[in-house]
Image (tube, rainbow over all chains, first blue to last red; front, side, top):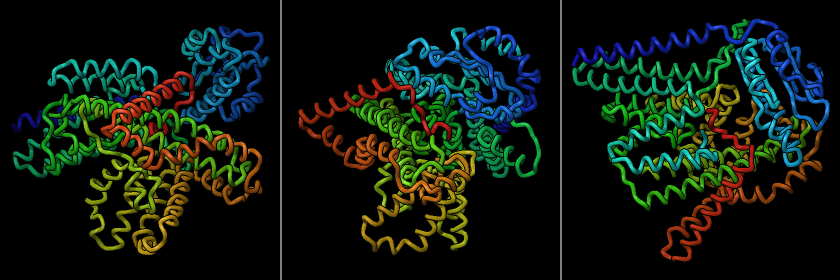
Length: 160
Length: 470
């Protein structure tokens, strides 16, 4: 009985130690990338290649997402020039991973607005928004609305 | 995976029920455990490992405490108990409060400790409290330790109440894990509970939630008083139908599989005091704190200062349990203070005043409570309160208020009606009467409610679950 209890105790302690190690590794692991946003986004931007999309981070980021570009280490934003287009690419390098929740909420709000806008009269654009991707990778976050959203997300991850 | 999703309703639930019913009794808990882990892993592929860790770790703790009791080693037994509780609470605190703690430390000490983005394991607050109820009850010798890890795993991970309660105490369910009754009557009762819950969630909570969003998308400074009040009333109904709807669905699913879970809501909005409100709202959480925190601290059988301390500790913890933010702490404290005021000052006066006045008093207080709860920061609470008192010069109402009120009037009336006991009683009377026509009418109502909810789910994109984040 005593020996069995000692074994059970040992297993419990080893389990807690293993969990502690996993958590420490998670906390000390470098995630995301220290590379500048232009470098990380290079391949993703090439795949996005949309002549109808315009790049202008600061003003549009504030207007469409309610976010201030100065709060982050870097922003890449391609947004549709025409109201009839939905393709959009946003990549943000955060100063701190704790900014992710607010950025994600802003992106989801933007996506909801676009959903409402296109639902009912522009099925192709609506489908694109439905299959859009939000991807948080450490200190980087990506939002893409595109026919090749999966490939762009893949390229973004490779760029990190 | 959530109950109000097409995948759950069309695939997961039917497959699980078929498997559950065709396997022999010996394997039913295994099927339940397996399906529950799949259910959890669907949204939390990594965190299912954390759940398996908790199951094994606490299962071993129960066996150790029992063995040490048989050997009469009290001190070592206490050591195992304390170690287990500390590990369980540490896991909960780490995953739930890590970001909150570091943000506050950085703010207070002007440090720059980097904060990792850590997703909250869904339902961790609920299942950790279930685990603690087991560990504490075994330590107190209220129940024997569970020797079957499948039964124990099924209790912790049981998918009906895994992610948003009710918090089922081990003491209340241990016998059912071994023996429970399955019958056609129980299954149909379970379906009725499930459909009621689904309709509450999908048809009422989701729709009234849109009114709340419409109001709070404007800043407090732009809103006239009545618009803010309308928004908070919308939230009051949204959170009730969302959470009680989920609890009803959980109770219904439990019944379909032979379990009887405790009721989690008893029409809280008909209360005539805050004390009564908390006897009717989230009953399983209130019971947990009463049994495992309040009574062990001495409850009300202590001096007045100690009783005040006990109440405030329990209610600050209740607030903090709901989320890692100061508004939840303030919300808990708000109710602690109100309960103390009712206990020591208002109690006798309240009993003497007309019921309708007591009811209005309670409504005002719990609606304001939801304003605190729904505001994301302490600053927001201040601004929303200021908006109600017209501090931003927007007056009492404007054209938009009228528009919001008129377009949502029918829905608001429906919400009031469905939060009263009469709605449920009418359905119960139809269901329970021996009259064949009345019974058919009840079945038709349930079919219509299900069809309407299903149709809504197919079309709608807005389907949040408020209590998942707790």
